[in-house]
Image 1: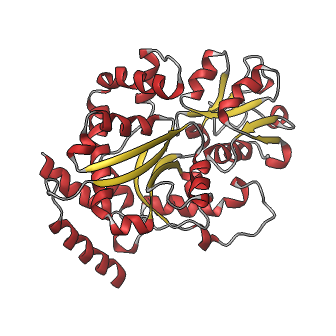
Image 2 (image 1 turned 60 degrees about the horizontal axis):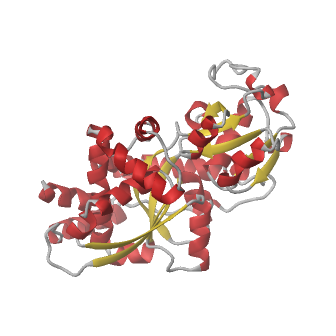
Amino acid sequence: MLSRFIRYLVVSVLLCCFSVHAEDSVRKLKVSLLLEHEAFLVWYGIEKGWDKELGLDISLNIKDVSGIDLLNDKHVNKGSWDIAGVGCVPAIIGGKGLDFTYIGIGNNESTSTEIMVRPDSKLLMDKGANPDYPEVYGSKETIKDSTIFIRKMTSAAYVLSNWLELFGLSYADVKVVDGNISDFIKYMKAGNGDAMILWSPSTFDAQANGFKSVASADQVDAVVPIFFIADSEFANKNAQTMARFLLMYDRAVKIQKTDPKSLVPYYRNFLKLYSGKDYSDEFCLYDLKSHPVYSIDEQLKLFNSENNNLSAVEKMERHLISRIEMISMHPDVEYDSSQYKHNPSDLFLRIAKRLSEEDK
C-alpha cells in the first residue's frame, strides 16, 4: 500500500508540472514498430505534424518483422529504440533480460491474427468438432501430423497452442516450422506445409491468393493486444516525452473511432510506402475497423490496479507467464516466472490525460 501511495504522490507532482504548451527543448525519440496497423497511426500523427506540435522529434523505424525481432534488436543494441510496439507474447515471453515498461496499448489484433490454409485443405473438413467452439475448423484427426509455419515467440505461438488444446493436442502432435511471416505464403503456394499463422496485412495477401481461415485468435480465446513498451531508464528520465507520444497516438485513435473512412487514403499511402503493395480502399477500411483501439481513458481502466487488485494488463501478463512452457514450445523446461515480469505503469497515460485536457 505504501508503494502505491508514493507512486500516487509522484504522479500528482508530475501532473502539476507538465503542460502541453511548455516551451522546452525538442525531445528526441527513437520509435521502432512493426509494419502493421499501429505503426500507421504513429506515422499518420507524424504526417500531420503533431509530433513537432507536441515538441517531439521522432525517428520512426518501421520493419516488416515480428515483435521478437524488435526485442532482439534491443538485446544487441541497447540504444536501438526508446519505444517499441510489440505483441503481448513477445513483450512478456520474449522480454527476458530486458528492462522495459508497458506504457500503453496500440490496438487489439485478436480478429486480424489467423490460422490460414489452402482451400482444399483437410483442415477445413470439420467445423465445430469442439462444440464449445462452433466456428473453429479442424479436428484431432485432421490436425495431427500437420506442418505449420509460424514465427516462434510471437502471438502466433499463443494462437497455435490454444487451437491445439481445443482438440486435446500439443506441439508434439504437429511439426512447427519457424520463419518470417513474409515468406509463408510463398512456401504454401509452392506446396510446402499445411497451415500458417499470419497477421494483417499478410492475412489479406493470403486471402487474395485463395487461402482460407481456419480460426482467428479471438475464436480460440487468444487475446493479442499490441503493447507500447519503453526502455525503463529512458522512460523514467523522460516521463513527459512518453506522455506526449501517447497523446499524439490518442489523436489518431480518436479519428479512427469517429471517422475511419477519412484515414483510408492515408492508410493506402502508408502501406504502399512500406510494403510496396497497392491495397484497395475496401481492404484499408476493413482493416482499420478490424483493429479496435483504445482512448487514453479506456487504457487507464486497463492499467488500473487500485486497491491492491491486479490490473487487466497485469492479469494478462500473469496468464501468459503461466503458459510460458507451451508458448515457448519447451514444455519440459522449468522457468522462473519472476524473470519475465515487467511492471506496467499508468504514469505516462495519466500525464497524457492531463495534457489532453489542456489540448482541447
